[in-house]
Image 1 (cartoon, helix red, strand yellow):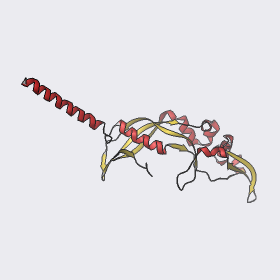
Image 2: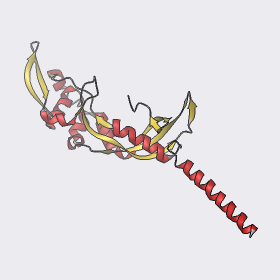
Image 3: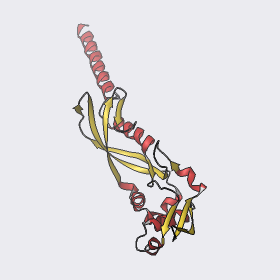
Image 4: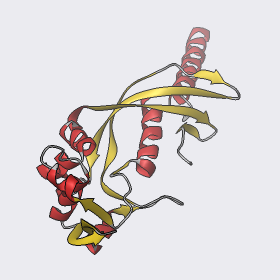
Length: 206
């Protein structure tokens, strides 16, 4: 009877230790794939939109740019032509300070894609990043009164608008084109810090 009682007590103690270990692994402050995935997703949900550089409308394109458009498809003439072909802008010939220009205005069709941070010019957004997989992370290190780490992850593209995938648009906006054409292998690093609520990306609330 004594041996059975001792075995029971040892077994119960083992279960308690195992439960505590599992609980620690599941803690929101643990450095693991799940928690870092939550931190990356939280950041991308808030700041993962992919947008073009801001534009000050109207945009005047000079004849020199128009003549060089074939050689430099990503110049002002090429970009405005791509926006016009996508139905987001319209150009008309006019003069500015006695010089002939083609003046482009943004159309109402572009407004659903506009996003503006406080105090900044609005940008045309064409898609967003979504977490694909957390690949690895650095061991957390103490910095001041908190711990920090860096996370390497891959992301996929979501909600990509049709006009962003057009060859003319990708040629006029090379960064966009490279992102779309390489969407299956996009890799990034994100720096994170430990807070009482769990791991959080730097810049999340900026």
